Amino acid sequence: MLLRALLLLFMFFYLTGGTDSWGQKVNKFPKKTDPLHVKVELFDQLMRGNHWNEGAIMQHVIFPPAGLERPIVGSQADCLDPTSEMLAAYSHKYALTKDPKDRDIANQIFEAVLKLEKVTGVPGLVARSFNQTDEPLWHEEVLWYHEWHKSTSLSGYRWLGDLSSDKFTSICYGIGTFWELCADDDYKLKAAGLLDRFMGRVIDDNFKLTDLDGKMTMWGNFCPDLPHQPLNSLKMLMGLKVAHRLTGKERYNAAYHMLIDRYHYDDEQLKAKMLFPAEWRNVGDDYHAARSLYMLMRYEKDRNLLNKYRMSLNRHWEDWKTIDFDWESNIWFIMVYGVLTGEDIWTEERKKAIKDMWGFERQTREFKIPMKGGGTKTVKSEEEGTAAAMIRNYWFGRYYGLIDPKW
Amino acid sequence: MKKYIYALYISLAVAQSALAQPTPPKGMVYVPAGAFIMGSHYGDPDERPQQMAMTNAFFIDKYEVSNAEYAQFDPEFKFPAGKENNAAIVTWHQATAYAKWAKKRLPTEKEWEKAARGTDGRVFPWGNYYDESFVVWDQKTSRGGSIAKPESPYGCFDMAGSVWEWTADWYKPYPDNDTPMEQYGETYKVMRGGSNFNDQALTRTSHRYYLHPEKISRYNVGFRCVKDVE
Figure 1 (cartoon, one colour):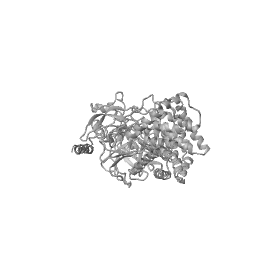
Figure 2 (cartoon, chains in turn red, purple; figure 1 turned 90 degrees about the horizontal axis):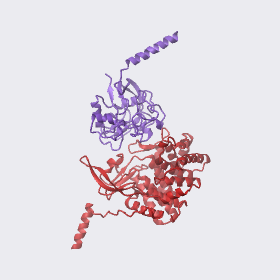
Figure 3 (cartoon, chains in turn blue, yellow; figure 1 turned 180 degrees about the horizontal axis):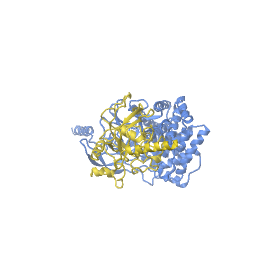
Figure 4 (cartoon, chains in turn brown, cyan; figure 1 turned 30 degrees about the vertical axis):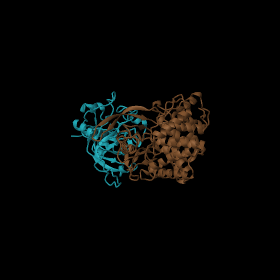
């Protein structure tokens, strides 16, 4: 009798959400003094425990009461960045360990990227993020541009549109790395298929990312007929090179050379790094340039083009060589430069920056939650940032022999 | 002798035109009546077809309405300290209420585009070339604070970049535009001019974007006003 009562009580709390049955929040943080491999392992557990959204990785998580146990609530505009970082991390890790568990995790993350396409209902249109929910969630209104849609292809899902050129870079970099280092034959086909649909749609739209409404997205401009950033010329050349490598389709090679021969994207990309005035230098943009150059310079064989990409890398290095390691991606720029050039640039300060890599602190702050009847309610909650770049940096460094396993 | 007659004739014509041009109210510039090239053939489908459009003469604010100016109308309006001269970010209804208070109104799409690009169909208010030094960075720089300080053909500042700007119009298709858009109708208002936080192509003079008049979410949208010439 007592057992039945307890069971009923459990069912009540479970169904009403009053239980902590989803409360699988991982709480174990490393200490700053822990060895690097311990810090990476613990942050990996935190990321996969608290940020895992059906394989997609949340960049930011707000815990209850402002957030929800499921679906997870947080900023979602940039989820493709940590998702691609974790996909690359596990691809590099698998390439080292050959452990099927690592490959399985990478496969699950890749499946989430596939789901980001499936949820939009349009082949090749990839969402920024998704949530399994029938109803709009409060953060949709306030944490980013309201570009949320109810999915017509996946019942019970909502998705965030308006993909940007930065997320374009994440997709090409993440999937390209997965295909190269981790995917088995079946997944290679799936990865090539996804990139084919994605890049095919971009080319069909004259090198623009377009949304459901047919308009170019807020940051989706690689178009030769429109003024666009030199950095976007670099990103597009990278995307086409990766698409050609994965699919083998001549279409992407032809588009790559058309943009170079007719529109001089190879010259435009030389200015991807804005060096002067110094206050306009943007390390956020450098991250997209670093990922693009990393993929492009390893795949390109033409000496003249390689020379131009190296010039672009050199312009970035002008800033990176004295950069402060105040952001977890900064040290990755140095790693990329070292891998691409083979130069010995490993000073003690840079090695220390790698050993000191850190993920995030859990913080508490107040959130202004919009109420249905108007007005807002202030709720204090814990939140977490992301450690995906740190985890990727570690396995990238291990793969290229830049990081000692004992560190 | 003939060339002096021509010079005299031209001088008189210019003087007459200057005399005919009414003096704009303080902080506004004059845009003459007439035709101009509206829309584009290379941008989003909703910018098409490119067409010749007409406006009456009107005055338009040289700058976007600032935080300090808006606060004169609504003392409850809050903005960060030190940002008095930055563009105000408001809903469409707030913008409309301010314009009414100032005995002005919001520009139509036609008026906005003509004031931004003049009559020659240029891509940006200053011409067809983009440079970061031509625009203010979103709301971080005060109005007119770009490095190059380019004016539109009629003397307006920040019609590319800075904040988006509300127009009076609902988001509807141009005549002969047959691209289906479920957003067309009387749900969204048109905003123009782009925000430099977004891609530079959105700061083109012909670019259109739609936004709910009340739910502006995280969009940085402000406005400038127009006034009819009596």
